Image (cartoon, rainbow, N blue to C red; front, side):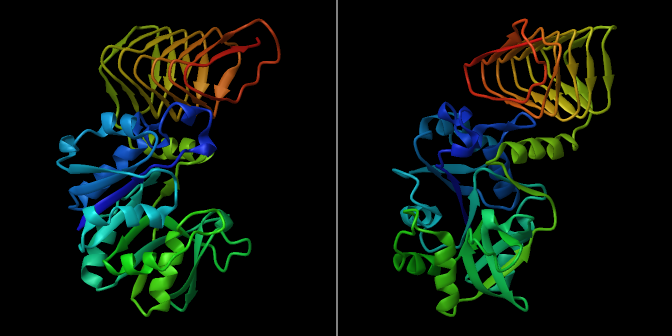
Length: 355
């Protein structure tokens, strides 16, 4: 079996951050989201992996390289524009050949990986296998309709969902999906929809199985979902302190502090992860916070945040909460009021916050 990871989307829901960075490389617990997908495929025994890339191809290739660090071999497949998931499969035909394959959306994270689903597909004799999870807002997703335990309809982002079972961003197919895709025309939003390809397989009498994802799953395309993914992954940490921490600092719970980081006169409450070469001084780092390498936090408080490389947060009286702060951003006190803050800050920005 081969793997196909889709990493070509523009990430409009996470702008302005994604004007300057691929959404799949935004870190969760200081690891790019895309890396979780690669790890899950390799864990399932899938090491021949194609990654569909778009405008951020150079950044993704620089981060992933040839895949050897995971024991994988990566092939990059260029998509000229976001033309739909089925289009991404179509342009990957020469890489995939006639082998069965697993398609994984690069901004998704499944807590328990995909090994069980790959094993079930190998053993089940289906032409396609789709994953679904019960969600509170199914109209945001592709949705499946069941007759008993049989999939009878798949519809993309319906205004009136036939169920609350949303498609999770992992699909398994055999070569018959290519025949289905050849019959498609672009949808109203100008894309070749994978839901329509699955529906074609159903209509043609192919065997389409489904499995429910009972563990935790997140599509990290929204800020709140990204923060929630960070929260869940951080809960799996084991305490490790490799940086320098002075006697005036208090560390509670499961906290990772990487080498090269210095912490003075601060409070850190886990779960939290602090990257390499950070500087924390008179700071409070609350639960569910991750600081990437080179971050500086001086006389400021953060909780439930993701802070990217080399950002600086200095001299704030109020606490920053539930925020995503981009690379090399600088957040500092200006002397004005009020003091409540909730931010999504793009790379390289300077934000002055009142005291």
